[in-house]
Image (cartoon, rainbow, N blue to C red; front, top):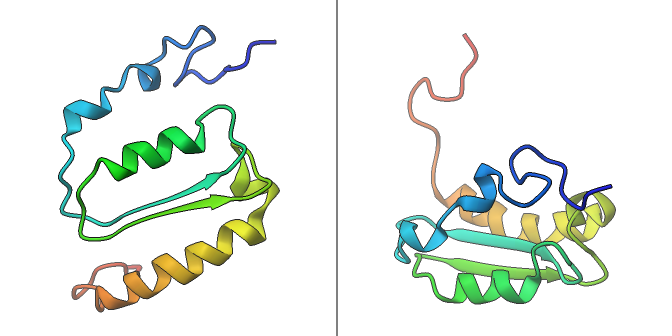
Length: 107
């Protein structure tokens, strides 16, 4: 069995997701960036994710390593994943304000 079977990554790590040039996006962002990462992620290592985030400029940046979790931290350690999400992102999202008139409403 291959490590990666997703069509996005490809069995031989040659799919479209594996070809994204993150550096081409630049390093200055007008939006806040939050990264919640399993500290023991062996597919997308936390050290690399943290180094990438450290190289970005954004109004707010936050990196949270979830101890004891790997690549699927949101599933295997959901409480530990939700806690910093709730603490870090919810207050930020609440500060953004109410949705525009008609936005987010079912018709």
